[in-house]
Length: 406
Ligand SMILES: [Cu+2]
Image (cartoon, rainbow, N blue to C red; front, side):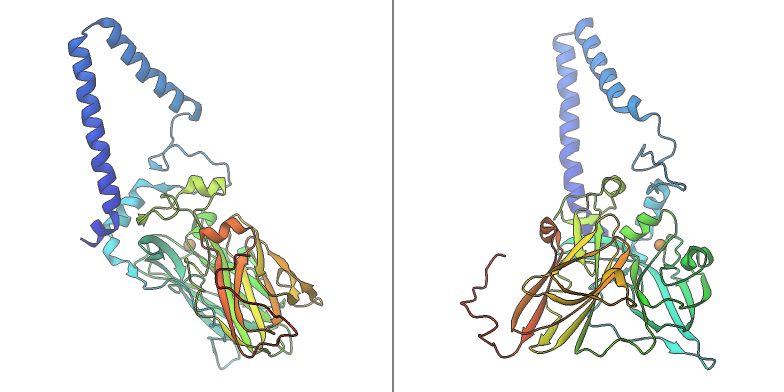
């Protein structure tokens, strides 16, 4: 019954189409009966053959029974297709996927969460898990995650640490997964040694040689496909001596979601590989869903704010900006070694990269985080930093209207 509630739009659509097909067939039958002639029959057959040639010949014959049917790609491994049997097993096992009330990771979640073993090794456990959650009201997506949220857990270690990381693939998963941490020096960033089948786990040990803010992501082929389902997060390797203390830290990732239905279409959304190849996402969001950062980021006037900003891609470069603020320091591309850039309005976050920004908040109000390629705002890429405190009229003075535009 639950599945029907997710799919009722498709069922109504299929009902409408079936009415159209049935009556089209009746129409053709009546035409042929009333004007029974070899000329009309020949014309109809010719139309059918002509349309078939136009659709199928340019793409060649499909080489596998997969979705989308007939998609041809030229990467070194299989393209972002789903074998039809995977779609069948998805619906067969639909009730076994965990329903996550909110897929969004709390942006305040930046503290180290790992244990340290007796021999001083940092122990990090991550679970790859495929879940069902809402992208927006009534829009349901099958997310693939690290830890059941998007982004995955914030990993926070120090330069020189030895890290023992175990990736466990939940038994309810339908797919293999792995983890490639851009902080790792070694084959596949760890992915070559962490390919795990559902129910399996694998452990790697690595030394955090370079300080920086790095992305991590699933790297099981088709890699872009796994990323586009939500499998990414950030790993911070603090330089020796640690980062300077600040009042507030926030963990933010931008990501793209390629749904089969248009923006806002209700019900369960299938992944659209063709849209991903075309670089045309339906949703561009922070922390996995529309509105994930709408009411959970606060600071007080005078606070220094630090944002760890990652970009899970797959395709877009983020032009990250906080409306009404200027970044005092930008650690470009997550470089925590070189002196930061200063006094920057908008900074770039590369696809599958990260940036760290810091700024002091001087005036109360709502500060809207955006990817300043602003059509993405309407696809979901926005968040709000709410600042409380006394207003200093020498910094800003004016009548603030709530629907101010920008
Ligand atoms: Cu994966």
